[in-house]
Length: 305
Image (cartoon, rainbow, N blue to C red):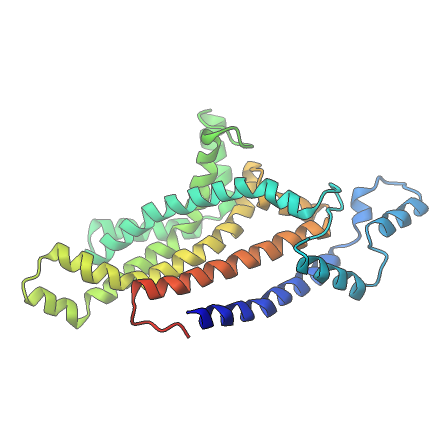
């Protein structure tokens, strides 16, 4: 186990380095932050001083070197727009994003897993058709469109729920439902497919032939052996929730990391964009590592290589 963890940590380093290099150079293709953050008609001397103060006058290789050194020190730099450390901005916005992501994942899991399990156990039943309809419908609806539709129905027409900002648990309902709808289709379909596959195995038929109660077969054999691909998908859904949260937070004005990233892109706040991407990449790597370890817990026969 220790050897496996050390190998995965070693593989994570070039992954983070590649992500850092990609986002560093791509974000600079968007233009000069001075053109956005400084008023029109600002004297050229002031613009040049702004670039010098922010380190934007230096050659790109030198800027990239400073960026990597800051990451090694655990520092993502200073925001061009806010003048605050990027790590401080991330810590301030992280609780809101975690709150939204956890609620969305929990809601999606509560809906997707039962529909997938019942659909796999009762193939062709009404519940199976409902599950497939839900998966197909939610997969076809863009996140921003569903969010705007919910705002229009529950915020404008019915005036039941707040639509912008975070003013308590009630404000979390519409963003969580929107994010959950984005996350539901894949785990629902994977769960259904995994249960169907396990149900057709010879050892399940043998258990039925020995007269083992159906509930025991389902709980002890079918669900346990079908959970490995489901765990994989649920782990990946955490990463997907971050990408879905970016759009959801932008639509609902949710004060999380996703909204911070959108604002940083619009103002060309390079350090913030870089910090958010590196943070998300590191989070995704950690989640994948946890999923791999979970394989061993679910099935001791699996060797972690």
